[in-house]
Image (tube, rainbow, N blue to C red; front, top):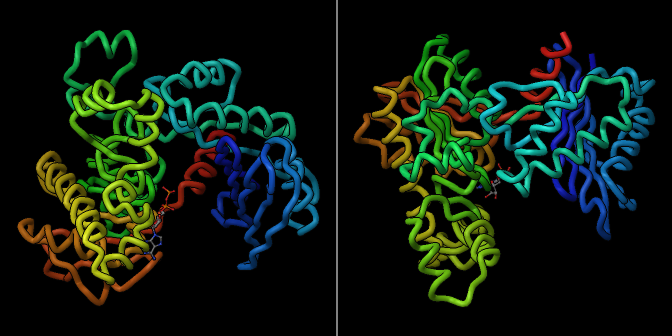
Length: 392
Ligand code: ADP
């Protein structure tokens, strides 16, 4: 059975088509600059990359072009071969504890939840509606970034603000990257041959979050009410003293929107280094002695180390630590910097094993008290598997 995994942004549409249950990826790609000028799409098929420039008025047209490409490349012979479409939805609030069908009721709920994720939920809704128009006979599902974290207990998900903020406005920790944390957790359990484990999963990409998982359940995670909480990120501040916000608003000529933009798009690596949001550039900067890049990396690493240490205590020990996503999978330096600061926990890096990018591997020494793994994430596959399970 063929299942399409979809991640719709406001002007983009990422997709992967899987043969299930074999979990074989047949094609993947992205449509970019939808609804604006210079739009194009790129496909990856049989290790070949194809890029085409074409006008893309909306997401529906992108889906129609995708179908043509699938037929022209002999991946499908008719539209009906695609039985399921799984849509990534960032914010499922407290309603969705697992993936769900895109029924009218569920669609209404994610529309209501858009106020909690104004940048993310509306484009996902656009994507679902466009897919429904094009793939009329397929089962459409919603797979949430937040669902995996719904097992977190109140003492961990509440902020110490008036309780009414939670009951009246939904102010609480929701957590994100749930599909990624869930995926690498199930992978690491297979590697260590045990299901009842305590694992700390570090999803370190442009956006970054760390999760403490016990016996399959998320018990705490670093992101919060929004994806700008916890760690320092590429352009996001992560946790800061909340009074900085009111101080900056009172004392500077900055609107609320401008401040929100700075905290989300001009902070993190970019804000501190005044150089780049990309960890590859930061590493180059460090090589050439750029002091702000050195400082940015130190701050970045320290926050990751602090979360790992905190979750080690919270879990009451740890059976494995996993690094995943862009930086976690590829930055040899960041992993080494983090692990070397964890020696107090008896964690030891195997320098040679750590010399790896984008590959599943044990990177700690045999005598390390906790094994540390690199496991490439695959959020698209989780979306396809959940969709397949719902169809079954
Ligand atoms: P997103 O949160 O946008 O999905 P990714 O998980 O794709 O982000 O991570 C993107 C980041 O991964 C890039 O900004 C870059 O900093 C980092 N990255 C990718 N390759 C490397 C590499 N070889 N070395 C260091 N960092 C890398």
